[in-house]
Length: 586
View 1: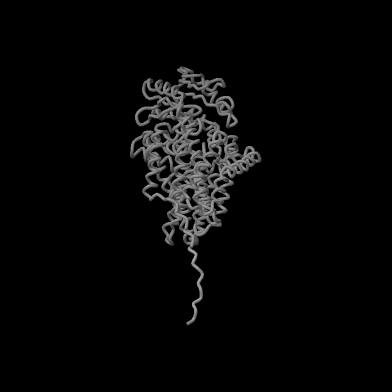
View 2: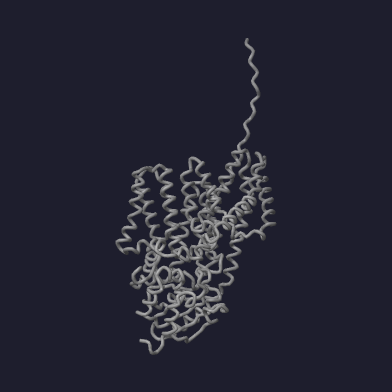
């Protein structure tokens, strides 16, 4: 008999690491829904600013429902989509702030659904949920600066939130392309509608969509259908509104608005070298803060008790964050995001097979950051322009880097656990900033479906509204230099097409046109609100800019009432002056 060869004893294969705990889809939806409801309830009625910007978002669609025409009877510098959409909502559900609040809440929920779906295509469901929670906590409902309007419920410009929704929808449609013709055509229509909002929203959506078409190899026929869909909304709008369909595009090339100090500072172009240095410093600081979590994950090799190891990592990072929390200006943490998003874009190019969706979303994120490339921030315009970057970087930190760590023999769960204290501190800092701003909003302005809370300026606004209401008939009212909220709340028409008389509007429309409109239809009442405009390089209305308008007012109107401090004075805190036409004027 042949002797059997001895076989080497079998070495059992190492057990695979346990899969991370994952909630079912319904659990994720429940968490997101609960956060949405809680944040909306907490901030209820505090979203708009009492005078700045948002009054325009109420007044213009109300006037459209009264029969006025955009670009002809109403001076407008953005695309036509948002004013007519809001006018339609007023026609269907009634004119009132509450109508826009509820409609915008639904649209924000749609944005979150689109965002979550896109993020799931480039990461895990958990990272998508965390990203959406951070979006809600930092920029969804809150107020990070003294002026309201920088949230999704009462945005300073509906074009920016509507454009974001359309851009996300176009990316999701292209991501779900399966060889048919409907997706490229639908994506083109969505981007074409985005053209009717604001240029920065359109450019970001177009660039990301083109990248998706190329990377997904949709082909010449699909690209042609996309182009057809893109031009259809623009052609229809041009047929109905003429040149107005071009929105802000003519002003970008025909005026010096973009060169104004306000916009140069906002983009960081006022001091590019210094701002680039700040961006690099912030990038290094961000990497330094996150590095311990990633090193803990990389050096923890196949732990027998992964949950214990993850808990230890969480505790270590929690201590680090607690020590540094008050020293970190969390609301400035978006400074390096253009550089970090560029790194995510490079990583997405190297990532297969999901590279197309990741690259497209990274291009979209970088495109939106372009308006504030050297001064990126999550507050102010950043509540929309930096939001996709926040979501992208959340997925990159929570999914992509831990996955790379796992491929190097480390433990992804440990790295993820170490990241959580940083993310929690980031959210807490923004919620705390919002809480401080909301605490100042104690004055109710408006009534019924128009009621909301305002800061101390609301007292003078209420007094002015009471004065207007006490006048016989319904006087026409002009508010200078800004504050068309008063017109809307008083339901008093501004007899001119112009709703704002700040430096950018004078550059866009020209003081001569404004003065001609006033002379042809002088208002019964002029309301002067206190507004310093130093950030535009012209401190005071009527003196450093709009001198012709100021002279015309002095000649034709007389002061009858002041509520609060005299407006447009360097020593004033806030006040409103009411002027009426001289008796001898026709």
